[in-house]
Image (tube, rainbow, N blue to C red):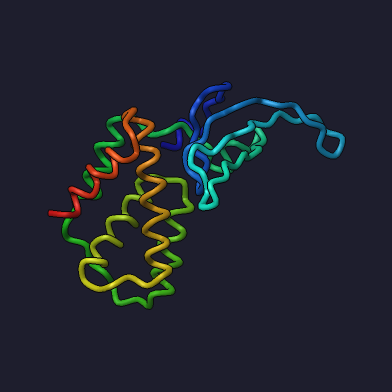
Length: 172
């Protein structure tokens, strides 16, 4: 996935901005910052926050790869994501919940949907063994929303259909 981070985006393109998720490039602006003229991508988040507000983010074009801005995954990567979700034998080490939380948050914030899929899978499997803490439930929701949104964009399906497909994996 890293090779695509160097891609230049144009207005109308979809881009993934970790850890916020899928965005759309709504404009490319030149702004003066401390006397230096810089180009910025203006990104509109496709998902509203909990209040229903849709955020916009400005990312310097020159720093796009550094912040992890990338194109959405492709279909073969979606299949790989689903393979990760289907893995049954997950070994949970006996680390404390706060260490597990930090490790999972690092994966969620990494920008890699493969890492996000691992977090989602692991939390679903953990949920089958015990009830999740409030923080773990929030983490699971964050991982699920990032993953579902990006797969929906790639497959040109509704998020509801993608979520149903994923829920079916964990129902077995």
